Length: 157
Ligand code: HEC
Image (cartoon, rainbow, N blue to C red; front, side):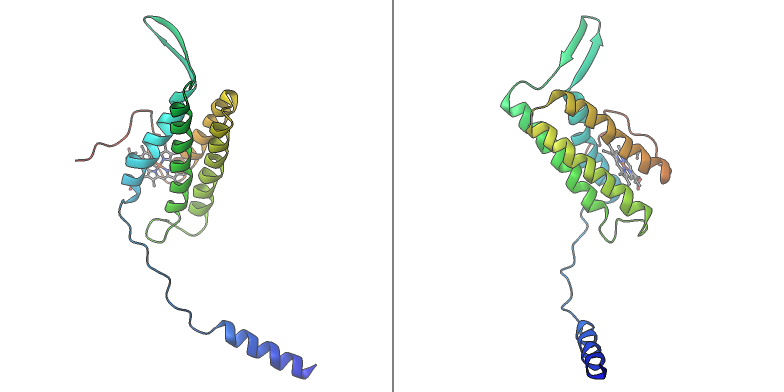
């Protein structure tokens, strides 16, 4: 028994050996730029893909019809999903608790959004799109950011 404890002690010592430093990722876009240059345009595209638009010429239903449109939709969902991962990077995450949960929530719903686009399921795209919007506002409310409106995307200056 004693010998076992000694052995376990050696093992845990082994785990504390210094590990080679992880490659440092370099931040290119600050959080605001990540939002306005990547997240918002992609989310906008997703939200606009399925729905009803009423204008002076009447009521128009929009649904993706071509392969290209469905691919764009899928691509947009991937951008939002992976952006949720980028938000959790050191240098971006604002804390180690709520921020990570809210970022992961966005990624999780975006993953469903990508699946809905892959399945070409119009009703699912509409439904998941609504839940995706809730993940944006949940974080913006928590961190006192204005609520994004469609068309808020940044212009490179
Ligand atoms: C984990 C938190 C978090 C999530 C999730 C999140 N955002 Fe943000 N967003 C922020 C923060 C923080 C800022 C402010 C950054 C700054 O100004 O430094 C911001 C800013 C923005 C801005 C710029 C607003 C302005 O007036 O400056 C837009 C647009 C935006 N987000 C869109 C979105 C959309 C769309 C989603 C969902 C698809 C989303 N965000 C999800 C945290 C989040």
